[in-house]
Image: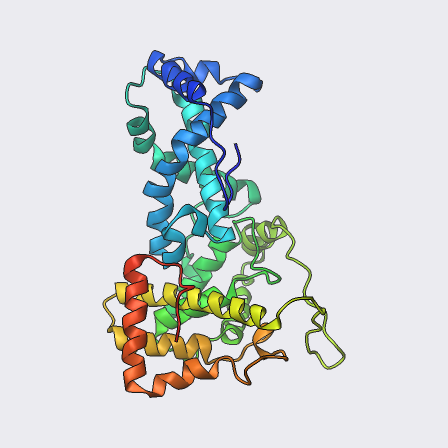
Length: 347
């Protein structure tokens, strides 16, 4: 069975019935113990049974904790990285079911739900261990001392130890500096100074502190980084360092609209996280919109031609008008309440 953003292929009803019958008889693990067609069929039925439970009980909760309100709103809204985590968790729970269902199980969904935590956590640690990363990333005392016990730098160091143990990369970059810039703002309160360039410099400082223990660094940072998937090829640049964009057919403004929608989704996720901490809505909305839409951009938004001279000016400029700020706050709160994906943000 294949799970994608578009659809979920379903098992035949009689196959799911057979899965339940084998579980009720206490013989499911035995029937699925081989690597042949029988296990493949039972795995497909298990996927159909398991994935809604995993999304509702695991994925949605953790996406909300990460501030990913859009991803938490539905399976088809999961970003690529979050979808990969969902796949990993579903596979872990399916494997746990087909391996450990050796006693009669009358209520299969309840049995699966009770084992979600152990199945997903153990699988996550096992995958990290296979990549050479720390299974339970924690900050050693010597590293905390090397970072001056700075709260943000210690949090960043833990995030880095977590990140080296996952398979993906952040597009054409090794570290997800855009996401961590938002985390920095939330941790320090310095939203204006929390930009990707600053975070990149801080990453280098943390790496320098980690290298104080060369053997530790090689084992738990350098080795798992080497096991990550290679990042995509970076964009070509001209002799002046400017990106060289290929000419593509179609409406150039469609690309601007797409990037604005992406930024709007990021804005909603940050706003949800800060509102969840009890910060005042008007202050949060103004700060987040100014940070996300008022910074320096590369790529689509600064490439001509546009039908408008400044595609971002109407957003940031609108923050000086009190009545317009009130309308923006009302619209964003409505989006948050409805669990929308942020694409409807219109300012």
